[in-house]
Length: 313
Image (cartoon, rainbow, N blue to C red):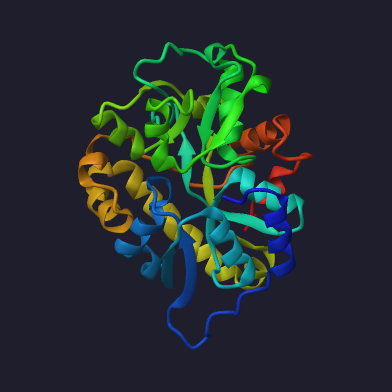
């Protein structure tokens, strides 16, 4: 995801409006950037099950390695739509890059633990208080994982101001914890299931519950100028994703094969891991918890109106 104001400044300086799709086409062409994760997989379901085509869209999906790459591509006009977490979109908008959500993706839900606090198998750490003055591995400084780590520690008896953070790619986290390079890590699926299969680490909590019982984790965004010029395409895209989300929430077993094809997550991991639940509508109340926590923990330097982060059709 976007890391730091320096990256944001570059994006602000370089964003341009995408060219409109050709009017002569029977289907509206869209270029969309995504991450190869379960939390973003609703776009693959919409594509393979024909929801995009049924809504008059021809969606070209580009799988990318990071949020900054997606945001830069949307800002520069190479992509029409991208996916990012709430902290990223709020930070970008506060600093002049006019991103706005047009559809939700994955939700934090009490019934699923897709993002966890992992400690070494021989660790004595059990609570947030035990993490005081300890080092936590996260995948990005001043971003979503840092926010959720601080909130979880505070909620569970610790003091987030004493924490130290180590930035690591998520696939390396379990090994780093077992080697005691970090005292804990914020691991996510499918790597949680992979670590368990290898006997690495133990789970001591659901890190997302430190923020709120339920909120939107990531969503699909575009630039304001693009949305204004392509309102019909944006509405069709949101409708197709809502239809795919409703199907995916009720058909985890049936969606597994599509997930394997598009993310390369092993089928064995999908069979055992916690699966994402997808939002069906954009709700300011589901965005506010992360924005408030981002301000509280200094990731955002000032509040942002959550209604400004949503496209109101």
